[in-house]
Image 1: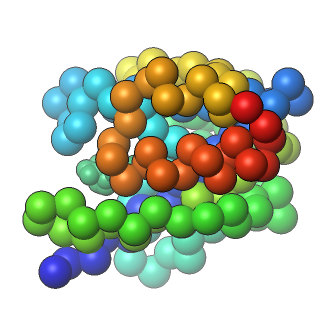
Image 2: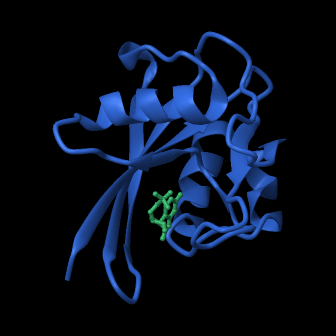
Length: 134
Ligand code: C5P
């Protein structure tokens, strides 16, 4: 089984809300809400990938020291196995805005279940509730 490595980040604002992004039309799992991030490209370290993806997708600048590992997702999709470390970040430069047409939403951890997510992402929610409260 092919293992696909994707890095994701829960951006947490001063109110303890978490940013989620809706996968745009045309992408696999379109319409589902996810934590921002993306695939690790060859030659990249995970933190570099995440910093690159956050700049590309959200137009924010994040320092590596501001990324803290929280947990990971390990999920068997039909055609590949997803391994996805989840980082949290409370400090960044700029204001997140959609650069790739994706809808964005700041949501309390206890409300994340109201937003349909890829099955790999759902088990991450209790870890976030444990971190920031519901
Ligand atoms: O975002 P991208 O399409 O490059 O991610 C590759 C695959 O990883 C997706 O098609 C999806 O199956 C999975 N994924 C996921 N949860 C995420 C990001 C990606 O399950 N937050």
